[in-house]
Length: 470
Length: 94
Image (cartoon, rainbow over all chains, first blue to last red; front, side, top):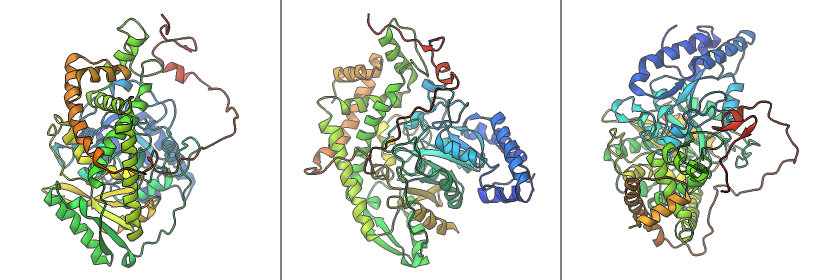
């Protein structure tokens, strides 16, 4: 079959017109993975047997029906912190190196219902803690545009695999920017949905009040197609919400775009600023109105995030105690030894760093000064956006202050790594949706534009995003 | 600068075994991060309610009805130490 870089819509057309079967499509993607993944290292596990079984089932559906679901027979990759039943799910950690998922995440169940073909599990920063995928316990994922540079994180595997067409789309997760940043670094589109719009059941938890699963693909249209399938209230996730999408039609001539002045004040690479402003200008040329807004707590959002998220993580990771599942170290004598040694040896350095930071922030004597105070400042961050959305419809800004950096460049300084999240974390604090889409290149490296929407206005930002390259 | 003893105490609370070299390393990292976080102290938060969740948290209820037992032992199979259908744990009390 003709080898090409498929979007969901194109692959669906090919299947419908019987240009190729789902099995042939699946095998062509295995071939691409075999050829490219030794350089990019996006995959932790390629599930050939399961994928071919999915593809055969899809071919049966396609043979029997004139019309079939858009996602049927189309190969996708899943970040390795999202459970796919019967397949190893490691969260890129030695702690779960041999853990086999006992059930499907709700989002996976929904994709399977459409006939999706799950081609493998992709690499990430360990337990989703990181900005570069260098914290994977196994190996880093490289940037397809320059293999000496990082793919971004923590969804580096999902982003890179889409960028080199080792899959048609992927699912990532975003707690502080982990879908948006690697999407920007790898030149693909990625959506962090509104908190509560996509079920977290079957997502290995990091920061429960921040985590969201989201789609990553070559085009915003594809991202929207996947979001429409995975979204929705789930009785198994008590934080998921039944939401109404509201007015989906976007009249570009009536659109008010807010550009936050604090995002362009200092620390941003001038080449990124230029590309982002060029993209915003394109919307202006289409007839939209650009309004300067202020998000005064931008500078402090990172500090809020780096108190609350490790605190939540320290609670969520307490479960890895070597008793019910995962790595269990039995070198010591008693029960306490199992806990101490399993965690000491099972978790990587960044995970341990955040557990210690979080435990400290929650401990008696420090809870009020750190965690509680951060929760109050979180309210102020949320209010910044509420005030801004009274004046504008969407907000546009950069995704990252830096271009994809070199492997090893920031690994010695954890704080320097954290600073790359400065434009993304505030959305997780406020629970708002954020879309990262390609806005061109600088020095041959991809630059992403971030479109931020009000709560549950994911559809609006997707519609706006589609206008940029369409 | 956070003290070595504080790092040790926190590691104990988290049930995390750290070598002396690791404790020193985390002491440095934590101090740098906590210095950065100091800017939180300058914000006026009087009268501000804390946000624990982006959406208004609401208790979600369902009928207290059993969905039946697990059909297979895959959850037990995942346990590192087991006997028949029991997960084994070392003695809690000495």
